[in-house]
Image (cartoon, rainbow, N blue to C red; front, side, top):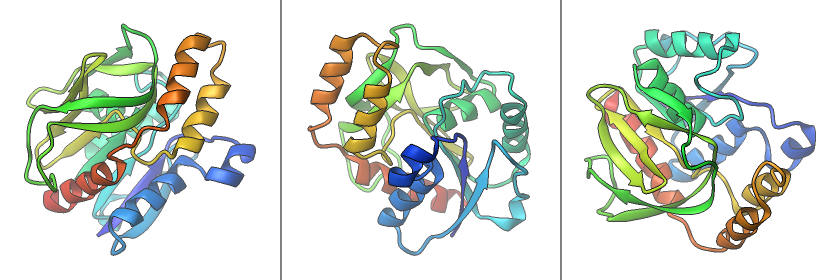
Length: 231
């Protein structure tokens, strides 16, 4: 499978020298899930985005931007999503952008930032899941969330603080609010940089939670399985 990873942010040279850009983080995560992948890259900020005959499926990265923002690159990305005829997946911002593109609603999270380690409930079991789970654990970092998924979307995962944590438009798109591509070191760096934006007690609790295990490897396999089955 030729997987196009669409990078949607620039984390800066100081961070990328250690962790890479989001596109590179996703490449490492996806290749751990499936070494057979052929990875292609595009950058939504600088464009242009490729025509869909050049790839088999696409994965849209996270970003500090708002999926409901008016930036030109965001509008172009939404237009691109609307016209490509390939299965799509999105992480965090990518999840929210897919919701926007297909008629859902995204806004600031009513409860404020979601950070650190979160356990989320599995609402709907799907054929692309590798085994049965009642809940999964994943790192999160977001201040926006999907409030209303696209019409006809299946609810996949949910958490009390973020009910629309994951949705699937069967055969078309899969959105996931969490970050299975993050490691604890990068998650901690983000948390430290957001002191002042988020209260210190919440930051400290989130940093402490990073020691807990996650199901990131499983979630990355789900993404690849969905994209393969949707081709």
